[in-house]
Amino acid sequence: MLSKLTPRLGYLAGLLICGALFAFALYLQYYEYQNPCPLCILQRIAFIAMMVVFLAGAIHGPRRTGAIIYSTLLVIIAAIGAGIATRHVWLQHLPKDQVPECGPGLEYMLNKFPLAQALEKVFRGSGECAEVGWTFLTLSIAEWSLAWFILLGVLAVYIAATARRR
Image 1 (cartoon, rainbow, N blue to C red):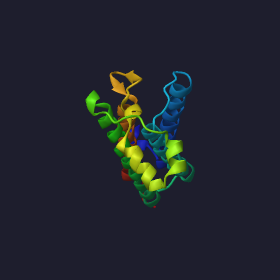
Image 2 (cartoon, helix red, strand yellow):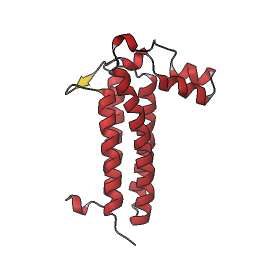
Image 3 (spheres, rainbow, N blue to C red):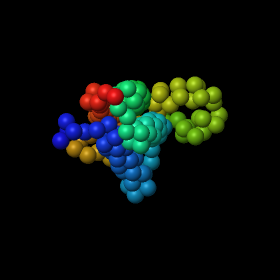
Image 4 (tube, helix red, strand yellow):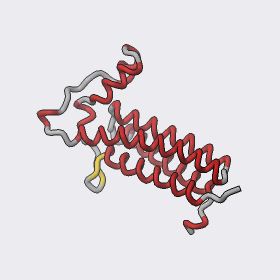
């Protein structure tokens, strides 16, 4: 079946996966009261960006060249998201005495500082980013995000590699 995966179906699958991940993040936030830290919010933005590209690819249904373009964008976004998630995982595994103090929220930083300075402060991390609230199969939300960014990047490469030429 995987050999018959068309780019349109592959991008649709990626869109549905990203949508399900985002919906689950909202469930955790509003029903399990797991408020997102600034790094979580940046990861959500990366998943939303991937959803937009997956949606465009699903609507377009490209052949080889188009699939390479869409998949390149997806791999870049997935790499950025994986980088953010890796930093988040690293903060969660710091010894308690090395965890940075909690800082202001992302919205406050974006309102008070230039974008570059706000992002620098976010990537330094804070105590709230080091907290592990929800786990599944011993993995935290950040670890699951990292795994999904990698899997979605691999899916994008697979779609481009198997797309037919025009």
